[in-house]
Image (tube, rainbow, N blue to C red; front, side, top):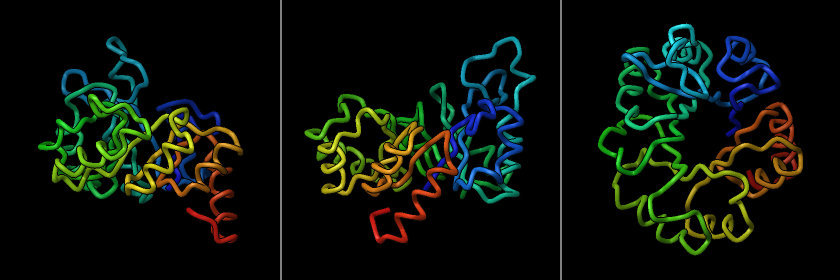
Amino acid sequence: MITAHGGALGTGRNTRLYFDNIGVYCADAIEVDIYRKDGLLYLSHLPAPLSYRKKVTLKEAFELVKRTGHKINCDLKMRGLVGDVIKLAEEVGVTDNLIFTGAVRLSDSAQLTEGQAWLNKIEGLPYTAANVPAIKKALEETGNPHFAGLNINKRYGTDEFLAACRDNGVKLSVFTLDDHRRLSRFIGWGVANVTTNLPTVAADIRRKTLVSGGAI
């Protein structure tokens, strides 16, 4: 899967221009950053306590992906949002489009009833090759199929860590890949998702990888 990072192709994070160009990205998913204030789920990379009502709302983003069919990566910027995001997705009819990253944790399992969650962090288990078996066990012990795998910063993606995840069946989403070399490397490793500001480049690499019979 290819996710167009918020602001891909120079459109600006969480802006209307970013959403207006959704058809250009050649991506499977878009990414939004989510905060909540006074019950409103709004899109912003940083808190906007004074101007939050002027921001694009999550409901607007959900209505867009309902029309286009894209997945939507809800990058939670504060804890305690999983249940509210799912409730809104149910109201709009986009639960099948939902992806969670950011401030979602294993402790959110009871609220995580829809979508798929890719964990940026598991308490007490740094993302190292030696910890991968324990990470797999922690994911499995939740009994929750909505936990899809790990969402890792590219700097953690050493060959040793990637190999350990592959060998233990732990799926990976990797961010943020913004050059041809890194995109080719991680797509070649067969990670489940890449998040990038260059989604059209990633789509071309994926196409060539598939044609050549490489991993994807």
